[in-house]
Amino acid sequence: MKKLLCVFFALLFLAGCAPKTPKAQRDIFAMDTLMSLQLWGEDADAAAEDVEAMLHHLEARWSVTREDSITAGLNRGIRPEMTPQELALLSEVEALYRRTGGAFNPYLGEVSRLWGFYDKNYRVPDAQECFLAIQAGMLDMGAALKGYAGDRAVEILEELDVERAILNLGGNIQTYGHKPGGEPWKIGIADPIRGGTLGVVAVEGTMSIVTSGSYQRYFEQDGVRYHHIMDGATGAPADSGLVSVTVISRSGLTADALSTALFVMGLEEAAAFWRQSEDFEAVFVLADGTVYATAGANLSGCAYQEISS
Ligand code: AMP
Ligand code: MG
Image (cartoon, rainbow, N blue to C red; front, side, top):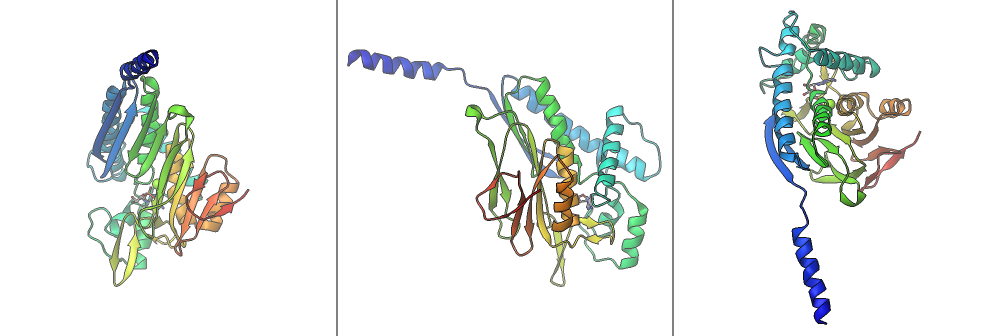
């Protein structure tokens, strides 16, 4: 008995001495939204510092409202200085615009401004104003930048000694590495109609989970809700029958651009687009609350219809 007790206390002592993985936790306000970082590993603190600096830098370079950003420069028709990496981002964004047939349209800045989404001075413009705003072709990286930031964060974590991390970049979730015991990351998807959590997607390793929804930013006038995701064909909020789209992809930039694009496309077109693609899975919520998920989305916790290939 005495021996057993000794072993028991020795084990307790050892458990107490086991080196704990250092953890860093940080809340940040960047890109007009709250972000939070949780990182585990020897370099967790240094990595959190670098990720925060990267987020502020990206915001300064691409903000549509900051006078000295690349975006503002391009929109004024001047040629801003750009690094090769910044030029590469612009060309990837252009490629996503073409790949989605213009459903992801980073040139609708004047449309968003017209409806008051930049200064919260909301109004419902007429069709002619909308048409002219589309023609303006004003760059706005708002539908892709947070996703791209997720990719850049992963690069930082890979260079440092970080075991795993989960980053909430204003609703865009970026996972990195594996949880202890090889468990998948479980990411809650917001219920766009009732609030709270709709269901959970399980993802392995490094992944980006991005939701676009009409519940995220909107105003109401005369009992009608006008949200912030614009249809480049009409210059008005997309009316596709969807209230939210979540995209799961290894690429944050792709997940972000496609969540916006699939929302504009609507369920049928989005399902066809998924069948001809290989780089993402998606969850769709319709205005009546019906949920659809692609075959590899790994959704649980709610009833849904599966979209098969
Ligand atoms: P997200 O929340 O990622 O769906 O992006 C929406 C934001 O991107 C809006 O607030 C606008 O700044 C911009 N935006 C609106 N409509 C579109 C669109 N169809 N394609 C690309 N960007 C858009
Ligand atoms: Mg987006």
